[in-house]
Amino acid sequence: MKMTFRWYGTNDPIPLSYIRQIPGMYGIVSAVYDVAVGEIWPVDKIQALKQQVEAHGLKLEVIESVPVHEDIKLGKPNRDRLIANYAQTLRNLAQCGLQVVCYNFMPVFDWTRTSLEKILPDGSTTLAFDATTIAEIDPSAGIQLPGWDSSYQPEELKTLLAEYQEVGEETLWANLTYFLQHIIPVAEAAGIKMAIHPDDPPRPIFGLPRIVKNRDDLARLLAIIDSPANGLTLCSGSLGADCNNDIVALVHEFAARDRIHFAHLRNVKVNAAGDFYETSHRSADGSLDMAAILSAYHQHGFSGYVRPDHGRMIWGETGKPGYGLFDRALGAVYLNGLWEGIVKQANKTAEMNV
Image 1 (cartoon, one colour):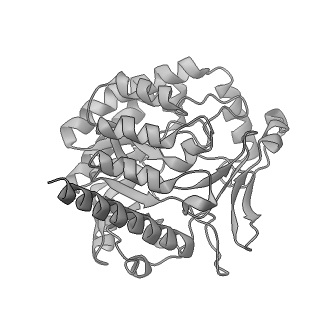
Image 2 (cartoon, rainbow, N blue to C red):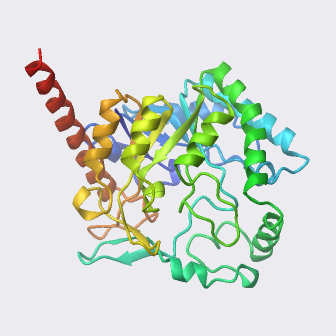
């Protein structure tokens, strides 16, 4: 298991020198942020990012994310040009030694929360989702949610939502299939593993289709092209926000097939109504058994990339919600500690059985 940490480039308030000090940290997960969505990432920009990371004794082997342009998701006539650009970006990443590309196929936004600073009993703050609040929003009247207003102007968002009214789940599946049929052969030839991130949260919202939300969706996606290059970013927190998703079972099924190329390890507290908030990574604090999840990975010989996904804001830290230093660092050390215990117990059991 290779522990990594997401870093948002030179605009990230957390310096690489601090991340390097987290015990057991293998590498950085990042992206090129100053190239417009749909355009080709130049080799020199990728190489500059890699050199910056490596100068601090860390590896850059995972990209999160290379965004998929909305016109590809909508199946517009210009998608072939955009897909060709995406393919060239993959070739450029491979040229620079990258191994895994995380991406998603979520319409409009790749996450939705109703609060970025829910106050927990211990005084820390966290990201939260209230199902009733979402259900009461009329998209035609505008959507006022934290994180949404910064990406689109009101009229842009209104137009985009209207376009998706003509796109149901099967149409979105068809557009994802078209994308994968063109991209996976390129990724396979280049030595890149594509790793789709599930919907966050894993349910339809605002009439937008959601197609990567449960076990059957993951299996259907992998069946589109049966290739090692067509894999998953298995996000425990995103999928775990639906009580019907058994994360341990998902790890057993898809790690056994060697199709989990990247793991986001996040704990959430979920109720039957669909409300959830993000907790510390500790099993006792959320609804997910992180020890059981890591044990499942170990049973299948997982040696891929993981990261502590999201964290609370603690100890007075301010910054990008979910992406502070302190709680994610605690999460990384906790997860590495669990992994060490699992490995040592497995080795002890093996010795006793000799």
